[in-house]
Length: 217
Image 1 (tube, rainbow, N blue to C red):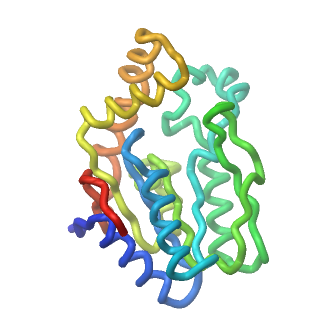
Image 2: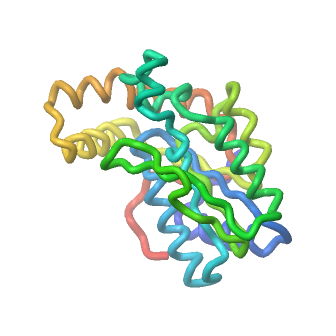
């Protein structure tokens, strides 16, 4: 059974994980709009105050297929669905990081403003003893996503009510100046169904982080 934590509890769990030998991996999963990136960034920032330079963030979104590839696949309108990511590439990067033989490993980062993944956009130094991996489908119990789960030492699922997710996602798309019709299509045809898939098909995590008021850590 998953252990429910707040942000302070998550920070304590991460710090304890860093105290164990070797490089460790903490996966943070959740539906679109659940706050995975924000949570990972907050956790990383707090760890920097405790053990500077010893943690890093690896976003799953960096492994998006390019729009040209999605067009050829006929999947461009469903960008963000499980089959629109290079899961093999993510698995390979995780293996390189876990092998821990290299001084630094370059990883891709998704540029949301440009809607493209920028290759080798971030370096994870060998000093990083904890890699915080964040993304929607990290705990998904279906091939090929289930291959990556053996590489995580601790897993977290963020739980947020669907109306909150919908409001956050609507606000996100409004910032891109989409019309109400375009936003509704993105929500109903892609974002919310993907979120329901995450909730229904993710494996049991070690920790559950539930929606709560902002707090200081």
